Length: 136
Image 1: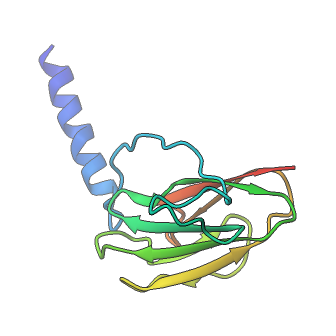
Image 2 (image 1 turned 180 degrees about the horizontal axis):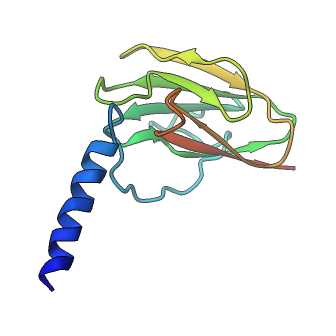
């Protein structure tokens, strides 16, 4: 039994150091997808195809967003913490990245060309990430 405890301790140290600059490696409960036409929690409906998103120590919130193939979606992103590597956003398979300054809202518009799940995240290999769930 004791070797298992020692192995777990070593593995735990490895995970602690593996996170590097990305501190939001904690397991996060999966939130339900947010549709682009879902009203905001403030009771004010956002413009069609626009989602308010924050970057916290937990990562991108919401981390899963519904989108439609061929229809532009705008993520209005506000980074609320300096304790994450998500200081820029990139979309999987796409060139370019957009800076996410602290406490400033930045609109990022993307038009999905195919249905399926498209990952987006930080510029450090998407260690902090989310998904656009794109339907037909």
